[in-house]
Every structure is written in structure tokens, then in C-alpha cells.
Length: 383
Image (cartoon, rainbow, N blue to C red; front, top):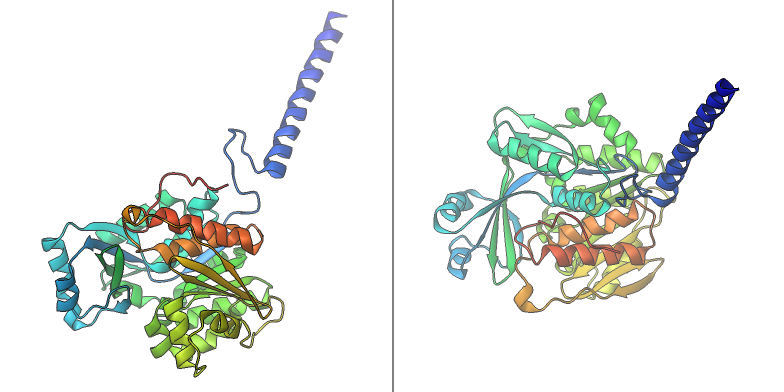
């Protein structure tokens, strides 16, 4: 009799454990909460979002107008370094209080998306670095951020750098691509790297990568169109629209989402002969350009600094207010656009409505502009 009771008790305990496991599995999958009680993003499976771009080490400093004039740098602009700019990196380091931050437009956005998602390994990133201490720092930084990186490591060129010159809270970027300019399509085609492309359902590539490997962009774009996935890009800078128009136009039919700011949008309009500077009209026109796939309609998202975000789809425009910030709290606009995209994508990959995507983008940008560089606190405080 005692033996029977012991057996019944054992079976009851085992059944309780099974019921408990089923309960935890239900909570985890249904509610997006881990057993420790930490909220995770239930829609964001591992490696759902892949970014590809130019990883750069940001050399950031508050400089003066005289420094900008000396190196022929326009306020609030982004350019590629020419020979005349090369001495500025050492001068910044010796003359100003500089901060080194792992950056690059796409890498910034992916890191912010990862931060917003709080789901380890939800994002991946591909780009080219040098075999040097800056490259090692980049790898360590992204690993700490929870991003799965697969860098091509160039034997000869040093890791790329970007001078971030801040004057009155406005930033001007001068990028010396170096190793970032050496990315090879062969690296993307390697089985372990192409596996990241196949696993992802969403892709983001800043327009800057058009200057490096348009072939790689085309491979990913065609894969996205053929497999009903979402492909997104950014206009990134006026010079991309002006001097890389041909490769940009080749990628455009595949873009399901086009990001940009008002300056880039107006440059795009001028280059295409549209004869309008109205950002809302331009956003609609971009959204209505031909598409390679009819599966997804194109949505254009244009930021305008402190003015409302313009979203164009189905021939209509919606305006979304940004989070206004007192001027005394503004630290650095560098990375604001990248952060907006990262926040936006963090909700898009969870299939949230466009309103939530824009809200998250505005939140992320608001956090970043109150800090130096594209940085953020340990965890987001986003509803």
C-alpha cells in the first residue's frame, strides 16, 4: 500500500512538472515574456533583420566654425573624404576632446533596432573592416550590443573612420571608408554569410553602400523580391542621389520602404527633374515609382528634423509629430536619422502598424540626440 502511494505521489509530481513546463511555454510564446519576467519581442525571431553597409569608427568632437571652413565642410552634411580632408582626423584628435564610437549608418540603425527589441540575436550585420585594433573594437562593440556580425576582414586597408564634427548640436560627417570600401560580393556568397540572408525576413541598407558594392545590394534585393520579404533602403545623403543616381535607380524597384530626410528628398526631386521642393509631393512620387514586385506596396518615410515625419503610401500622405526637445537638452544630432530608422524597423519586424513604427523611430531619435554619438542607455523605455 505504501509503495502504491509513493508511486502515485511520484506520478503526480512528474505531472505537475509537465504542467508547469507547458504553462511556461504558453507564457513565453503567447505573452513574449521569459521565465525571468523580462519582456522580449515575441515576433522578433533570431536573425529576422539583416543590415549591410559600411562599418566605420566614428571620431566625434565638438569643433568650431573655423575648423569647418578650413576643411571646406558644410554644416549638417555628409560627404566622402578627399585628399584635402585626410589631415583633419589627426588634427581633431590633437586639438579637440574626441570620442570613439563604433558606427556607420547601417550599423547604427541595426544596433538601435537590436536595443529596442531586447531580443538577443534578432539582428545581423555584414560589412568590411580592417585587421587592426579598431576592427577588433568594432567586433567587441557589436557583440556587446547583441548583434550577430559577419565582417569581411581586409588584409591591407585599415578600418574605416568617420569624422563627426559637431557645431551647435548640428553634425557634419566626413567618411574615410578605407576597409569599408573593400567589401567583396564573394564574402556575401559564402554559405555561412548567405545563410543570414536566407534566414532574415527584413533587410536594411543605407544608400552609402551603393558606393561600395551595388552588386551585393542587388543580390539581396532580388532574393527579397523572389521570397516575399521586405527590402528597405535609405537615400542617406544628397551626394548619393546626385552622383550615384544610376546604381540607386537600379535598386529602387526593389525598395519596399524608402527612408530619407527633407534635404535628401529635395535633392532626389531635383535630380529626377520633378520641379517641386514640396516634401509631401516628393514622398508620394517616390512611393509611386515602378516596383519589381507587386507583393508589397512602397512606403516613403521622410524625416524633417523638428517638423512632422512624412509618410506616403497609396498616393496619400500622413504626418506624424516628433517628440519636441528643449534646445538646452540637445547634445548631438549625429545618428538621429539612423536611430529613427532603427526604432522604426524594431516595430516593423514585429508587424506593428505604421503609426507604431514612426512612434518608435521618434522615440529612439529623441533618446540619441540627448547623448553624444549614436548611443543609448542600457534598456529602452518604450511602451
